[in-house]
View 1 (spheres, each protein chain N blue to C red):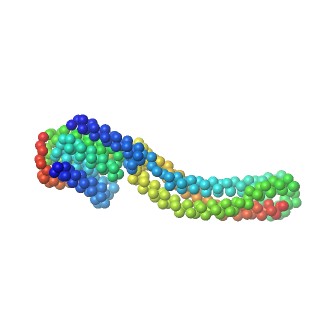
View 2 (view 1 turned 180 degrees about the vertical axis):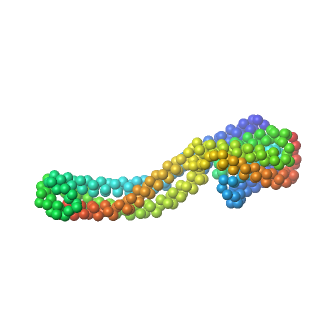
View 3 (view 1 turned 30 degrees about the vertical axis):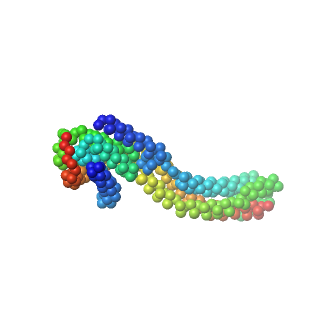
Length: 186
Length: 162
């Protein structure tokens, strides 16, 4: 009987290895995370677009504040009178710099509105994906580590989507005001 | 052929009850392991290669149905079948307490291996004596309840004594 016991124990180990290799639930093999990866990639793209728009607004604000400072004008954005003062002071070189900076701003409101639309759409998909992941972790605990990584990425993505939808309207307003200010200086 | 049919019937019934009925009736964490109790019963009642093979088959089926890491149930089932077949001469076959206690011990071993494997892979598991102990008590109660029923069924099988 001993040889049968040894053979069956070996078969149990082979079954474990096979299950792991072909990714059976409970086998601990590589799980298919394609749909989660796609969602995470879309969220990252939205977050990257939002950050890029934010950088453009920051760069433009910095350029304008730098020019104002060069002419001895501080706190430009808090006082409309100082904008009039700056308008009289700007040189052609300053105008060229501001024109270049303002060109970058033209697409920002549209980019941000598109980011908000996409973020709203993706936000509705995240809870289902998280619930799906929780189910898969329960059903396939040996592959839980991979799935938990995706869970953390999705949680982080959810937070960044929330900040996109919250911050974007203010940033659109800033970009529009900044564009108007620069146009007024020309 | 008749014995084979009875094995298939036992396996099918145990798999169905263990997978579909008991989880609905009992809270999570105290789900008993009727599969292991049946493997040990078969080893005590029938013994030999048939019991070892049944232990492997039942263990593997329960693994594949998602009750544990694939291979652990099959390995424990095979070893339980072999160990209890070997000792069946020393264990009074119609005693309730001894096989029930051994079932609980085997179940705790299986639970410990499963939890150890899961914890090793970073799976979200709660490992601790309360978990293992609760599972052991559940296995003891299951075995105590299941053995009389299985003994009743056993009377229909051709008796094989060591």
